[in-house]
Amino acid sequence: MRLHEPFLSAVVRRLHALKRQLMRVFLCTCAGLEHVPADNQFVLVSNHVNFLDPFVLAAVLDYRCLQRTYWTGFTGAAFRNIMFRALSRIAQVVPIDQESKAISNLAFGSAVLRREGNRVWFPEGRRSVTG
Image 1: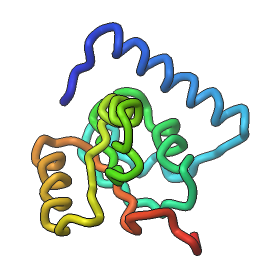
Image 2: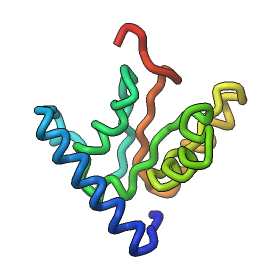
Image 3: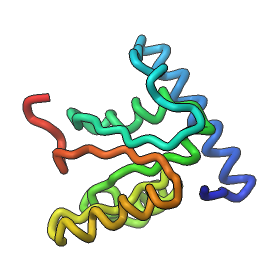
Image 4: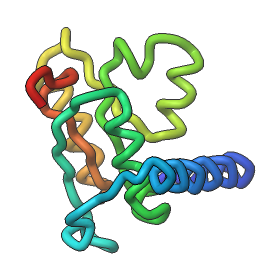
């Protein structure tokens, strides 16, 4: 899918390794990874309970899989300033605007799937109050 410049790719790879280490230190465990296809496309739908959810999910995916994975991100949070926009682009976040029509948001997701990318979707559109 998307290829980063060599320097940026090295930085992203190091950050991913750091995330994985932090998850081990804090004793985060993951069950069901055997159901995530290594070489095939998938859509992962998850409850969104706190701001760490995408980081934890990214930490459990291997780097090759992560390179083909695109995330759903609310434009009001993921793209609200220049720093967040840059990080969202590096992380391959697809912008979702709750104020726009649902069809345009679905079109972004559909484009990712047509290009054989993986998709992580938080269907609530915001953090879940009930989990």
